[in-house]
Image 1 (spheres, helix red, strand yellow):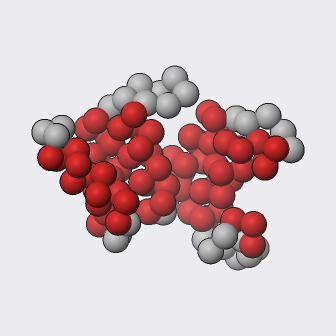
Image 2 (cartoon, one colour):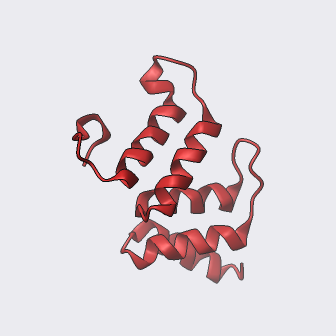
Length: 102
């Protein structure tokens, strides 16, 4: 499902994830990007079980982003949650972390 075609009855996790995309992009250039608001939306979407948001938080914690410190243990937790739902990218990133001994 694309965020630009999000139906009114979309699940809350998808709604939060799309709000995060809007915040980080500045509503597609219509306003200033707000990475901190984006992070909060991604976190809520991840907590609601949205695999894409869980993988996104994994990446945020793996690398650090916008003042959020890298935290490999948290990254692995979020990647594992997304991978358990079949998110291939999170599965790959988690495997790479394990291969590197993280």
